[in-house]
Length: 99
Length: 137
Image 1 (cartoon, helix red, strand yellow):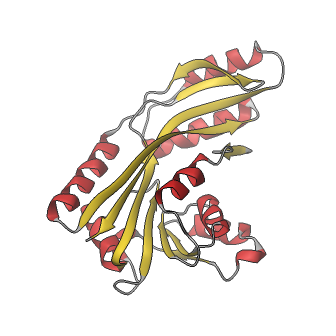
Image 2 (cartoon, each protein chain N blue to C red):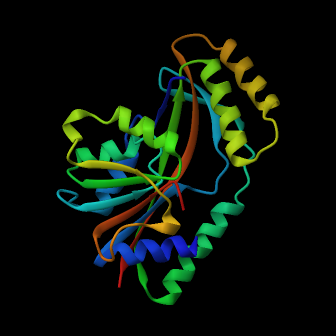
Image 3 (cartoon, rainbow over the protein chains, first blue to last red):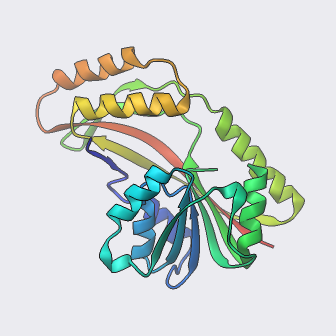
């Protein structure tokens, strides 16, 4: 199946309008799916922990992760209701089509 | 949803931002794009109960005084499919996830329009997205 979501990258335009500087920000992305948006956020320079309740989605996201983002992106199975992270550990929390 | 927002707030640093990015509660428009020109074929018939519930949850945490609204942007987002098969598969998956009844008549309408359109064509589903930014107080 070949489907392109947001080929014009309007999401990234909007995210850059909303947060000026993503470089070195610690970001928690909730509902990352196959990592489409995660990779775009990594391109902006963010360090991301991306979670999704679906183990299959996380498997796909890991398989698609570009090698150059190995240190910037970490994928994990998880839900917004039970975050394993410590208090006050992220600069940005993004619900990606998931609230 | 409120619990998820509380959890997100817990892991956010003081002054950090929470981003809520999701489709606006507006019926998606399905059409055929030929050389960049979008021709509307049909509108989808989704339910928006979950979206309204999420909106209420956001209002609730704002009223609690733990997060404050900072900005809101609405912009267009499209999903592009190069074949009828792709569209059919996506519609089936979407209807299943969204709990919608069979969308066979919409699929047939779009497939008919696709077949009768000439030139470099693709099936496009358009929907506005809303990006809200809230700041931890």
